[in-house]
Every structure is written in structure tokens, then in C-alpha cells.
Length: 189
Image (cartoon, rainbow, N blue to C red; front, side, top):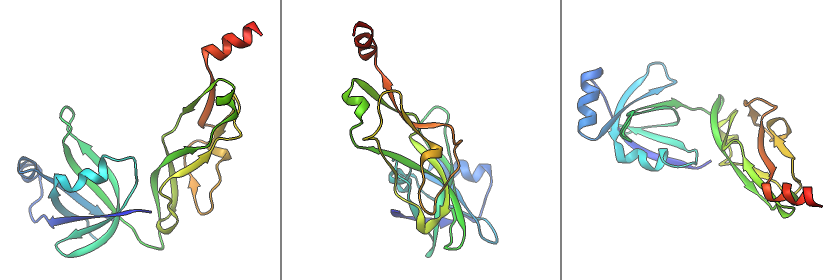
């Protein structure tokens, strides 16, 4: 899994007024959970751009005043109108604990159903998985070469070593739908 570094500064004062003051200065308050005590910090908003505005999932080397901790994003909060990041929660990771994260789905191949006039529909762009950090992939790759019109791959049919899928098993991840043109062609034939 890819990693990214973020430099942050520990917050001594916490609370709404302090968080508001930080945001006015272009800084984002955050919390690192998973240790003995939560660590409150802040970092410039631009530090989070390449981490949040991407479909990729990253391990984060969070450098708070020189102490580097490997973590993942737990939650983000945005302003309801402006696209401004208001708060970030991180979860400390370790080699012996499992984590739950959303991993992007990547489709590869050229389905039989598409050659026969169907259309590929990606129902889930991400899948929630539970795994040890060292086993987390960059993406869940699904090869659709064998899918025909009306067929799909469901969460239950996906099996990856060292990964537990947490989405409902009956949910289709990718489906080959019949198009109106293909339906009309079937009706005439």
C-alpha cells in the first residue's frame, strides 16, 4: 500500500474557539486515536490535498513535532457549503492489529457482454475490508472478461487472501447491463 507523509504540530489548546481560529489561518485541526491518549494536532490544509482528493487509500506517516506515527484516515469533516476541510481523525496502525478501510475497486478486461452490446456498470466504487496493514492492497482488481449480459460479480464471489470483505455478500460489485439498443435488437431477431 502507498504511503504519504504529513507534517503537523501538536495542539496545546483544544476547543471550538481554537479550532475556528486555526481554520481562519488555513490550518486543519485533527486527532490521532489508537494510543494511550488521543493526540490533538493541526496541519496546513494543503498537506491533506493529495491524501483526501484522490480515490487511492494511503498509509499516513503522521509527523507530529518530530514524532512519526503510521496511521490511516478514520474520518473527515467538511464545511456543508464550501469545499473546506474542517477536521480529520486518524487511527494509529500497528503490525499486529487489523484495520477497517475502504479500498477502491479497479475493473480490468473486456467483458463478453460488452462485445454483445451490453454496458458495464460499476455498482461499488470502493469495498470495505478488514485486514492487517501489511496485507492491504492499493485496489481490489476485478477481471470482467468472463461476464456476459445480465451477469455480475457479487461481493460473495470475491476472495482475496488475508482480506475480509465487510460489504453485504449479495451486493453486485460490477454488472453487465443490457442496453436499449441491445434489447431492441433482441426483440427484432
